[in-house]
Length: 219
Image (cartoon, helix red, strand yellow):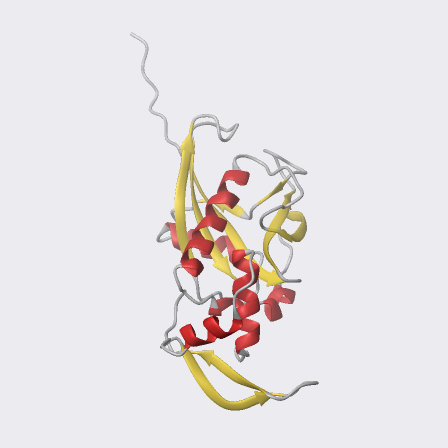
């Protein structure tokens, strides 16, 4: 009788790292240096290493640490993709996470085991993505838009101190539509996530008051 071989799925993590620039929600893509899918664009990701990773989130943070030299306060799970055909190495599952990077910290990116890094429009990345990462990206964008549409403020995408105009423009970039300024500011009055500062940003027009996220805020 032929011995049966037990199949162990390949377990990996992928991360949709978002930022906002040029009035659009952007996501980080990497150009893979190794097979499978060498030379193709993909979300940053890596294989679970049980001797290093206490959890899948820890694996995601380790993978990001190779790309970003700042500590990211938020790494949140989106969903799991699995099946026998999504990876040429065999039956696999990938847990998708997203993270948010303030635009003023984008220069903290470093290159490691990839040929290139690129920020692209999260809605129209302009590249055919490796594996099933187009589905990954769609799911991650839907997750962040759903949270913002429900009223959660994307403060992790903003600098430490920001104006309400910067906050509104960030939300508009995520949702892909303009917001009424008066209605938006009325909704913010009841928010416990914002701390009003006795500081102002001076520009061509009248000074704009600065705010910060409340202590312990998480998106």
